Image 1: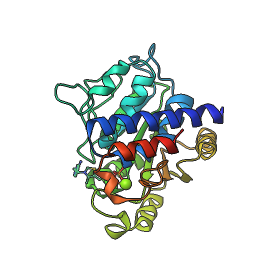
Image 2: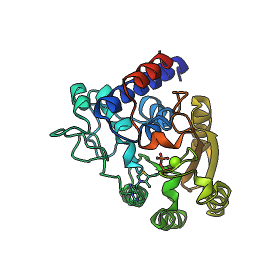
Image 3: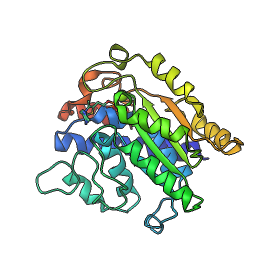
Length: 269
Ligand SMILES: Cc1ncc(C[n+]2csc(CCOP(=O)(O)OP(=O)(O)O)c2C)c(N)n1
Ligand SMILES: [Mg+2]
């Protein structure tokens, strides 16, 4: 793993996202910035996912269950030339194909998401189907901590625990915030963690902005000798990388004005 390459890529993705969100005057920039290291690690280090193989049946699959962070994935697809780079400029604009919630009609997108609680059940089904087909691939799914308030997430976890889905890795983006408040004011994180531990799956807690943590966790996953799925609770910061956006509720919905964009890009030089 080349740390410098990954860090440069993460910075580039953050810059691309900020410019597009500012131009579109759209929401959810904080939700995108918290998952950049996880996505960078998966798409540039871990998964086999590129222009030549992304349509193969036996490729690794990635499901972004928190589909309101769609632009984070679209930016990677543009960076990998799977969609046209100029398409990013049409994001959330009239007549554009890249809408604010993830859309599977876009090349490289597995399923449409945005209604919270749907991505994990579908990822679970994909992992089960791939296991039955004896494919040697993995399915990765990324859900939000607020999204864990959805009942369908827990139906999925119980099903996952009962079905030996070793080929499934679920990330929880624990950025401590959801749409209208801090998660702890709604359902405290320690309850969530206790419930996750009770599932008896492979459970890891990491710093979700630390590439070495990500790498070490995947080493543990590949050396584990059981058939269980893995859950990685990644502690992250909403708005990560832009000091005035970090851990601030308003950046769930707000988009940066000209001055704010300039200051944000300055921090990410
Ligand atoms: C079923 C459903 N209810 C409500 C919403 C509106 N909504 C969009 S994002 C969001 C907050 C999600 O919080 P979290 O999962 O923690 O993601 P974060 O924004 O922190 O990345 C809400 C309530 C939705 N998209 N789907
Ligand atoms: Mg959250």
